[in-house]
Image 1 (cartoon, rainbow, N blue to C red):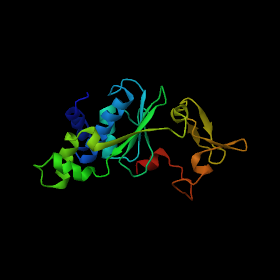
Image 2 (cartoon, rainbow, N blue to C red; image 1 turned 30 degrees about the vertical axis):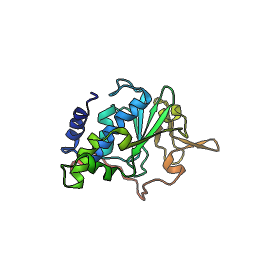
Image 3 (cartoon, rainbow, N blue to C red; image 1 turned 60 degrees about the horizontal axis):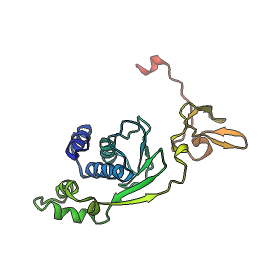
Length: 203
């Protein structure tokens, strides 16, 4: 399904609308896979996408490439950027894609029939050549791709909270194993541990 319209139809079906960010995600998915010489949507797990924001943009990337959280071929590094790095997990080769800085203004010239900027972007992003729309740069991952992918069968327990840790995401200090939340600053905090019985959930 390399046809852009089919990809956008799929992405928009997940949101009940189509927006410019979905178009950017789809275009980056196609361009990134092409830069790595890989066919999409992928039938295996050779292509990994590291998106730098979630939402509609990630849906466009997924629709174009087949990379997804559920298949462990998409990861989120939330930088608040419309950008994505694609990795060939077999070779470790990676490319990062982002929109050209002036892409919103450029889009107007590619959709002169659209009077509102939003719709000019929606249409223009579909028509613009890759060279006008995107930046594509080779990058090197700071962590080996094997470490990112990890071994899914490995399970250990945190020495503090006791919770299970999968995918080799533990932190080892002084010979002890900790989860990320206990080893660093967790994104949540709690004062009381609640044990809910099945009956309490139905009240």
